[in-house]
Figure: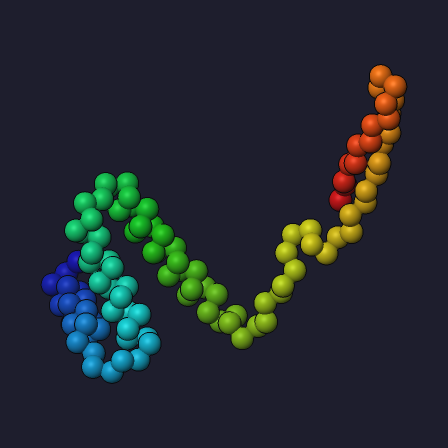
Length: 106
């Protein structure tokens, strides 16, 4: 990072931390920033820090990619919920008792 990028990042952090209005957006941004700064105090391993870093980067990218589609209603069906189940019963004799087994197939 260059000195200008560092100064811009510090100015942004100061603006978030010193914002006087209690809007939900500012409160959440402050919590995210303080949580990120708190990671240093948690004495985490390098692998844990890499997981956190990658997760945040991927989430930011996903939000950026899917933002244009927020106005489109989401589909509520998932997986095999819309399919009918077929149930077959199989009977066989074993030692003078009749046993039943139910097989479910999709």
